Image 1: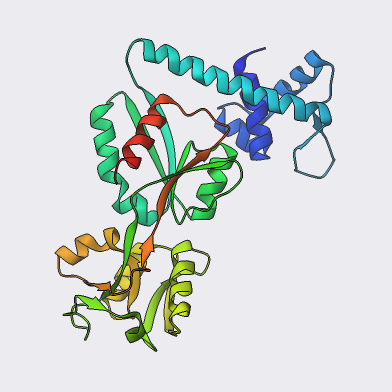
Image 2: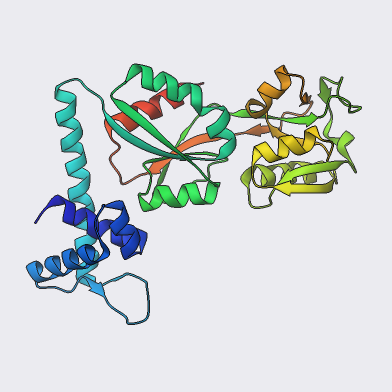
Length: 295
């Protein structure tokens, strides 16, 4: 029995898909099925429930025990591999990181470059997605680390805080607010806004703050990514509230004007998340330390 077979089994259970487990392990679906049969024959126990016409992968009681212990074996094997790499003083391997667009495009690149200069044998593989998908991929094991805004405590998830961002108001250079350095939230009453979509944490936080001050705004448009929001503000769709790092280039180039809020509420926490029961690779630990040290 090979360690790769145990990994195929765990990936199949985590991803709930024979095709995805096959893709992740660079084998065919029939090879995945054969490896599961081999495990069941070896231990003389059925590990998976097979229901005709249904795609779900359901564990038997024996399968639950086997799955749990497989994860322990794989975690120990990862520690073994990292320990052996450490003997020669070389940090290598690929760290798969999923992140939201606003952080990944505007805050992580300098840190990735710094990491690569310190550890040239290692690589950061960045994926961009929504917060819900980032967290789901971390919990499923599809990625090792996630970087999100407004990280929420969740069972099985460890959160490492990074430096928080200020949320700011942006407007085009010809707007009446363009010369302002600071604004009170009550001055936004009845204004047109370009917003993040409702399920995005920054939008939820913005709505909550506006409501706490009794301010009602008009929705001109809503989008799921920061770049579209910025372009919409540039052409005059409305105002927007965004994290400051995401508009620093436009501010320097005079494409957008940035106005600070007078209130202290406008803070966006950012954090690294990873599975509590997973032993991080040495490279991942070093990257987390680098991100944590932003403060």
